[in-house]
Image (tube, rainbow, N blue to C red):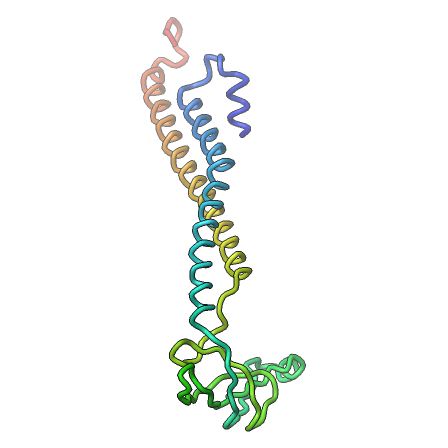
Length: 201
């Protein structure tokens, strides 16, 4: 931005080279696209992601149901945290529970789940199952879909800014390379006569 402001102030100066103007225009367009384009990309990504996630959430809520499972066997596993005191303070003991539940058609199913809370054989707890009675995760909610789409929009906007900045840097480097080549040509023309009396330089 300092380059743009500086060139606008001395745009009529004969010392302002074409490469300076190109560099300024590159910076100006990059700034405009970052300010206007990146938010549009973020909003478009958020809307597209939210609509897709809402459809997925509706399908999951339609196909998944909550049912009760009965504990058959419990195996206590050591905590994943290597520090015993920290793990005990956080109650991170893992209970591998073998349980039985009924599917939507009434057929019995058996599987293993991991619980953090103490539980004993014969206890009941709720699980989520799909249309075939297999264990699955909790269906996505509308709030969860909105949160994920917001994160996707922010990530897309940030990525577009990064891409624009990278493109600007590459373009400016090419402009600088052209500027240095012109300097070399000019110096090759006037260099031999530099400082001689009566020379046009």
